[in-house]
Image 1 (cartoon, rainbow, N blue to C red):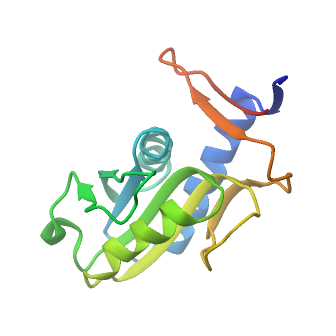
Image 2 (image 1 turned 180 degrees about the vertical axis):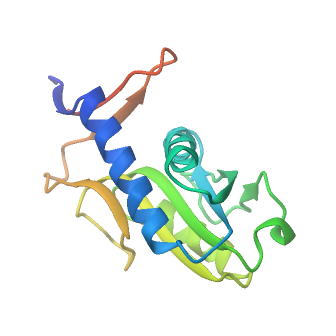
Length: 166
């Protein structure tokens, strides 16, 4: 299958900056928020959003890595921050691609057990093929694709990135 680039590095950088501004606008009354990225690409995307937020806002931002088994999401989820570290704070759950919603809904379920001030979700690409009633509050791009097509986001070690459809 051929690769069709749907987002270039520059476009992804613009989406990250826009999402960072939207998050700041939503959480402007907070002093501290937590950005929880689903490993591995969601965490990389979350780190880029965190870096952008620290440039544009005075918010104290804690970054949290969320480990979820994507083939078996019912297994226990592990986070790099303890529940006490994100309790009673605003939290944004981040992933790179929202496909069926399975990963996001199970990750949401994990965080629901803890009282949060506000809980939002962010994705770079929303595929519009959900099996679960989950939505992204902040999204880079919405894309209607066929079920046979696959969207992949690539974050290279040199800092460049792109998203393609195959």
